[in-house]
Length: 128
Image 1 (tube, helix red, strand yellow):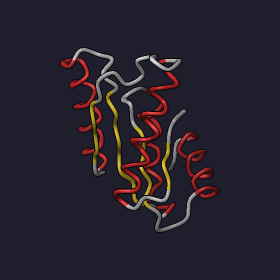
Image 2: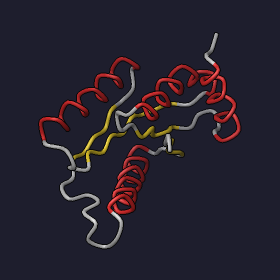
Image 3: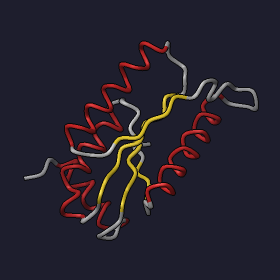
Image 4: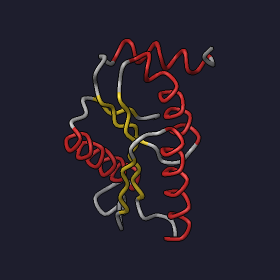
């Protein structure tokens, strides 16, 4: 029996994904992306997809605090039995060329695209 959110993720996954695809799931460690990867993990078999977790540390937190978040995401991926990829970048979203958040988003999507290309993934799932 699936939770209503998991049923929603399953419906969306059936509409957007094809069996046999590999999907990179972006997980920041926040509530939204954590809920997404847990739900996708629960419905992946029904979708017929393979998941891998990717986490990008933008370097905004002190290294010790950021390491705790990365460890949390790594442990979550391990509990779900999913491969885990991570990178820490310094100065991501520095605001040098505009909005800090817009720069960080570009960095994040570039990283996710790099992971997808490296592992042969056909899709990237993000919570927002």
